[in-house]
Length: 311
Image (cartoon, rainbow, N blue to C red):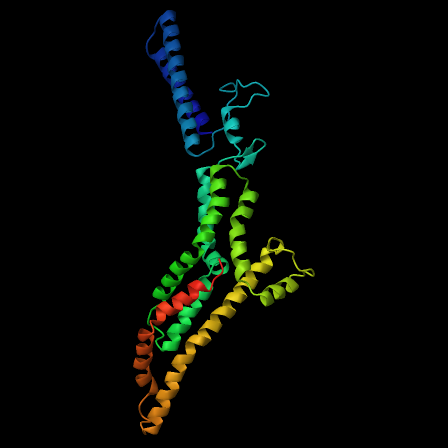
């Protein structure tokens, strides 16, 4: 609409100028024709400039409309560059008819990020971490020092001891499942079964019969599995965790006995001496620390934990 108004204004102005020139000065017919041609060319140039300005304004507003006869020489059935660029598909294929393929770096990165996200759960459920951290926490409470050693030290020591216990299992899982998968010599399902098999053997070697029977009955399994390979993971993993909790609290009970005896002797001694205002923990704490240092308690508990796993 703006372009039409501009063209009309230009045309009227040019017409008035032409009439004024013809009335003001008599010229020959040939000169009038030349002036008329120049005037028409000027009008066409102005109209072209106005149209170009209007198209530029529409492009800035995102209202560009297709123009007939300009850039529309495409034939039916032939896709333009825009249409061909829009038909882009993405696929993640780790295998094919010709066998396993090496996963790309993007797929490997996604798998690593996923493992990091579920690593805490795997650390608690499938390794010896549960038993170790509970026993060390109970030992700290038995001494009577709830903040010494701090939680970071307890967790760090438990983590490295768990890695020490699980190192044969982790190595076997890497060699049998993860490494062949990254090299492209094994399919995903086969690699998962090969990688989880060492953890299955470790859990089966340390699970209690009562806990395993409980979870199998809860999962609806009526017949006892002939081998460990037939035990479903949804029953084996919780049974293993229950067994670890039971074993950890049994060890904690044994640890508490000598420190409990020290507390009883200290309290009885203070009562017999009439020192009822003296807090028993103030006297029993040095005796507990002395006992722990004399028998090398941390090393003794660590040795018991390391030798208590069937690997």
